[in-house]
Length: 287
Ligand code: HEC
Ligand code: HEC
Image (cartoon, rainbow, N blue to C red; front, side, top):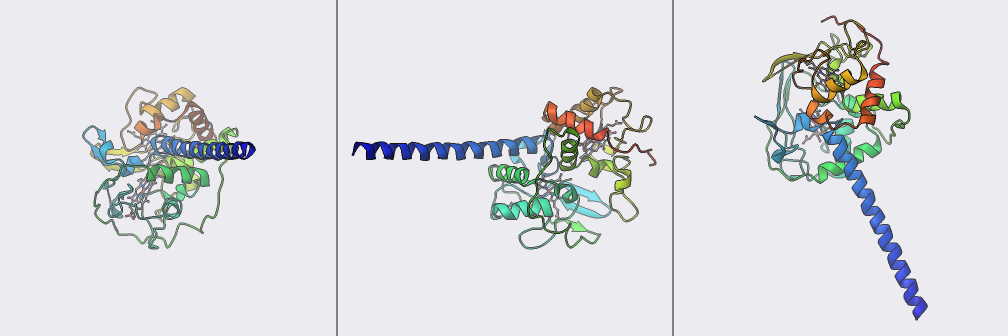
């Protein structure tokens, strides 16, 4: 009887221990999601409505930001868990597929400017962490207008992704490349060819225009070219531009780069990002 009791209590404590381990694991996943979303990945830069004092966090990720370009009039979607105006009725797998492959549960394709080509690099673990973060958001009811596109959308952004890892943070340059991809730096900083696609042979050469309430900003050359790029900047000068929006010469950069979010990038991750940028082939600025 006594040994049964002991056995039971051992079993129970084993169950409790296991449950705590699961909770701690869930906690870690959510923490990672919070770091990515409020740091390098910065989905909120497009999906959180902006008020007069910056992002309106009472409507975190509730969408509605307009993107008015000749090719499209797009509105970022409400990605809070509201079942009617957000993505609350989607399963985790459906949300994950929408982010990494750009396909909604009804089979339609998500259009630009959401940088799906870069989100295709997301590892399974980081994607899961982002989905966990989205699930934990406050529900916000916000009906967003439909986007209209004057360009044909692709049927998909590539073959289905079954499973994917990421480079080890110990491999600084490779991991920096991963971070630059999921932060979609090169979406804004790479010129487009005549077909409208990013000309990756000129990755990082800059020259794209971003109209907005700030006027028009033009993305800069972030390759290591000594005259046209940032080859002569120190690591700290590059990091300050990324996290504070202040250039080497002390002038302030205009939006839409996500400085407020990038300010939360860890020192180690910033080191990796800068190490990777220094490996880009140097480019001249042509436009
Ligand atoms: C550069 C701006 C931009 C960024 C960055 C961005 N999105 Fe989007 N996203 C959009 C726009 C615009 C749409 C609507 C496109 C359309 O109507 O086809 C959209 C649509 C979506 C949808 C589809 C929702 C629906 O109801 O149709 C999901 C899910 C989504 N985004 C999640 C994310 C997540 C998660 C991130 C970060 C990993 C992210 N987005 C980053 C602009 C962006
Ligand atoms: C949404 C578009 C966008 C994204 C994403 C973006 N940038 Fe930028 N970036 C810009 C624009 C536009 C400028 C120039 C703004 C200006 O001149 O006022 C800029 C400027 C810079 C500068 C200053 C260079 C100079 O010569 O002044 C650096 C460095 C930089 N970006 C690095 C990055 C890195 C690294 C990332 C990814 C972590 C990134 N950017 C993501 C749009 C973007």
